[in-house]
Image (cartoon, rainbow, N blue to C red; front, side, top):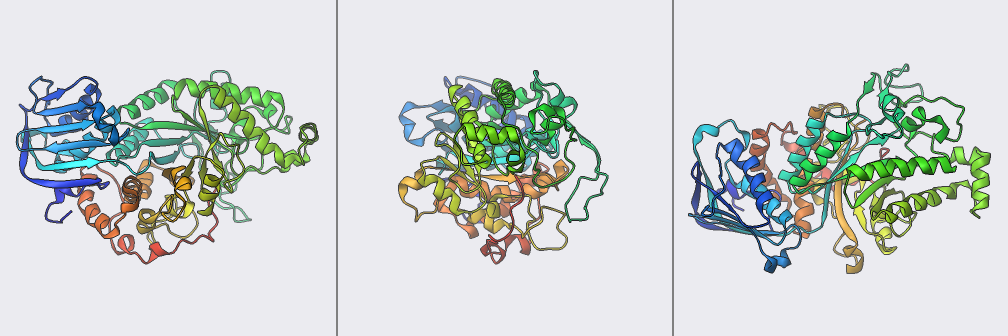
Length: 536
């Protein structure tokens, strides 16, 4: 896309785009014709384009903007769309509603950036370049994980994050709701998960302990209501985004054990919600009361989240407590397991089977790609080779190598970068260059990789402003490459991103400015696989 046509500098890059010459003018008389089934896309167009641009975009059988679903466009898949902008009319077509929702975001980007902000709504008319676009994503899973367990974020900001994801055609918000440091979703059957588990006291040790461990030096609390979470699910769905909840087990559960000590391996012990960052060695017990708890919690989770996938964590689970527990050792022996450590796989299999019985797909983090039952879809993060190992075993895979997708690392080696997760930088070029399913893999293995997602853990990202700074423009890079797949083009991406920042400015996104540090390719060629990954 030539620099002389900034309006065609779309992000992510469409599969096929060509300029037709000329301009289409949208004004207050421009109406929308929504054919049957496309009405939700017309509503989104009015909300995201009409409202900030000051255009009514009223419904009309003679509207110059036509939105239509066609069965014969099945080759575009669930999310693909075709868009034609001519001097007198605009036509957006897809086989499925989700495709129309993706096309609405392209229409937003074709408008001048000022039309996104709502600050120039009195202009009265806006011009779009005349184009022909056919667009289909490379992979069906293009996500972003937001950790609201360690640092609670207001629901309004989470909705804003959804809006920014939708602009970039990302389609999965992975919401990390529980961890050692906080429990953020109410469960009617277990009210202390909120009254106790959502509140973290100030660490009495200061930000750093004598062993170099990091602690939270300020008190912290917060939780969502069920109505807020249900509203978020609807809001995201209107933008074509699925919200996947994560409820950690059997490790990363210190907040739950603070509320209900009887769920642990030492029921007589009263714990606090953890104020330390890292991996906690307190884990769930393996008695039947624990499974009753997990089933009840997940039933309430599934009532709120209709996502086909339910994430149950599973990673970073020290088994020391099981090895020291007579009850756990007895359980392992009764099951014929080699030792208490093998209770982890048994535990995950039981919970996974419960989710399958409920018609859901269990999702979990894996440490090596080979430790979860075959019915699990897995997220690989420790090493890039683990994605292929999981695919070879027949798993569906979301590849999320921490050295390319963890956005809580700093973006460059510039000493002015804010405090972030300890470790080498993950620069923009590395994120854009990440291939979750390299082209030299056998096709059968590549086909099992659903896609990728970015991760933003919040030990060091305290506020919405800090989260946006760490997310952007790196989330733009992940969105571009995950949509375009093997069509990755770093120089072309940089050119489009330079124009795209005007859109981010119009939306008030607090992103890291583009400079020599962010646009260099030197840092991006270093994968730094020896760096220790942060806890998940």
